[in-house]
Amino acid sequence: MDNVWLTAWVWMGLALLASLLSLRLGVSVALMEILIGMAAGNIWHLQPNVWINFLASFGSLLLTFLAGSEIDPHAFRKHWRASVVIGVASFLLPFLGALAYAYFVAGWSLASAKLAGIALSTTSVAVVYAVMVETGLNRTDIGKAILAACFVTDLGTVLALGILFAGFSPWMLGFIAVTVVVLPLLPRVCGWGFRRLGGKTQEVEMKGVFLILFGLGALATAAGSEAVLPAYLAGLVLAGTLLRYPEVARRLRSLAFALLTPFYFLKAGLYVSLPDVWHNAWLILIFFGVKMVTKIMGVRPLASMLGYAAREANYTTLLMATGLTFGTISSLYGLSHHIITQAQYTVLVTVVILSALVPTMVAQTWFQPRSRVDAAIEPRG
Image (cartoon, rainbow, N blue to C red):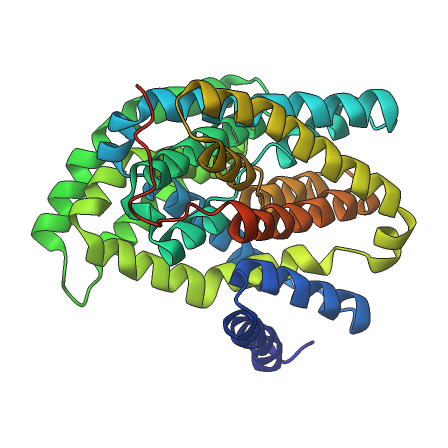
């Protein structure tokens, strides 16, 4: 479309439709935006232009930062042992399982297989966080432990994406050096800025966060890595600061979910080809099975060893098996960098969508703790 306002009207109309359907059906708005994007891409052949690509990229960057910042440092310190053990297993086994199947059985290239392993190793913080808040489990020990484990899993995903597909060059050394120096300084610098300059119409704190994300993203891109890696790490180190200044976090979330992330998730859905879904239905089901089996193998025994009752262990395992945000980010990264084909992208994103729906419904229907607040146990360690 040559008319920029008509283009904006169409995309925002799709975003609004996704939000209304999300409220009506009670599903994640990100998932609904992907499904609406699938319909728009396959029925109307909608395509993004340059500025929509930028908004979508900005959306994924800010969403990754916010995902990192959602961790409660106090809860993580309290449950660090259970969270690290479960989170690492939740990442490692699905990563290795999906990589092995894609490479040795499905015949994908090694690079495509590594991308598949990354995309299917994720746990959806967005889905899990929404479930925790809805049920009240975010105020319990088990809920806080699950959320902390999600961050460990997704940290593994982001690190794998940044490391496995990075080019080693002087730019990479510079990026690592700058990141190591800058990240520890962010809490003090941003805390001072939020305290002294925040709450004014100039929105200095918002612009400062964007400056940091753009700068680190530029260095990561120049180094051949991915901008979401430093964005996630910046969110992690600023989690405590944003916890003390909730108004800043609220405004960042409002901007992200009202304007930026709809463009990202709609764009992610555009590239899902429904004919490819049909032709690769068997492969989609196998990959979905690989993710579920490896998640169960990795998480369920450890949850029992850490002292979870059977019902809570099953509930934890199913929620750790969900996937959405980082699964689509990884898949779209692979497609845009020609690591995977559109057919492979369709397979991975369809599996990600299934993993956002099926484990959540099973967990909420059959394994939700009977007392939403009082049934939570205190994991040992």
